[in-house]
Length: 284
Length: 248
Image (cartoon, rainbow over all chains, first blue to last red):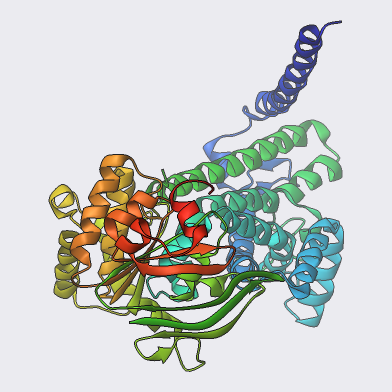
């Protein structure tokens, strides 16, 4: 077989596999939309569940998931951003930084159920928050912290040294250089990390199981110390605990579709944010 | 005025500068030439302590700017860099507007007076021979300028904080011939107000723009004299070989 034929066959296989991935994604999406679209209505999105979760809507779960996304990002984003800045801009390449980096990566590799148990022990019990939005947000925040640190670090690493030199040579301090030049340039890529985190937080079930998620709580939360329902857990509950499967199945698919749409919407929003900042700092 | 006494500089264990002593007079243009890796850029970056940014380096000897050893503990490096401006090899404007690029040095040095900033920006752009080309688009991104214009913008940016010394590290090596000659004309004019030290790998450029020239080889300052003398009648055989193009 000559080298051109080999190349053609290799590329054909690569292309086929790439397309297969897209195919699977479309299949999942299509399936969920096909089964769930009929359920989604204004009423479904704006009312609480009724009739033992075989009727009504999923508003409390939507609100709960949004609260958890916002809460975990509010906690993890500043912490992750500042750690990432410290590690890439200040800390050099000594033993301590290498240690922190290894530990951060390890944190990212811990199964999410372990985070759930840890969050319950620390936030729910030791801190006495009880099952609450704040306990769940902290737990989810810990989960996405490594991701945010790593993307911040990578984003800063991608900024050419010449911009830092240019700023420092004008008498700017290191901190001014970061705030005024490096960070704005890195921001679009940092936002990408944020998007990934949001997707992750919206879909996680294990970490909220013991820290915030309510089985059935058909009202909206009053404070951050309140429990909430959340979409992924609600999906699990509806799909597994009901006795009237025919009645709860459409609700399960509707919930899945809503979850996907929320993640999609947030990605879209973050994309716009990214474009806005990216437009301001275009480099070439 | 800049003066160095017995400078030795190391990158790790690599001996990059060997016992370099030099005196640079105010309002002159001094060029450093020499083959790649000879230490000329390293030497230039000593004067505004840009080498501090590189890890694992060490220095002995004195580097005196305006009567003070700039490596003394009492010297604040950001104050030094206000006094000793720098233009880099590749134009490196910030991803900001033309105006904000020039105003940057003032803003980071806590200048708040808007009228003063506007005035300094204009003066600096005029000094850098860029004002006429950009005065109607100060709000536009600096990246919309050509490479030569970007480099003059970087010169204006350096001038805005009123330095007395301007370091130029191969400022025209990334530019076309026309932009290069504009930068060289500019150096001639700026020398009346500033002390200029320029590193170049282009010997004709050194001959065209400088009053004095230092020739570096393997970390040593082989010869340092008036540019005319250096190019017409060098003292050392190595200098003669280099400027006649036998190596490098």
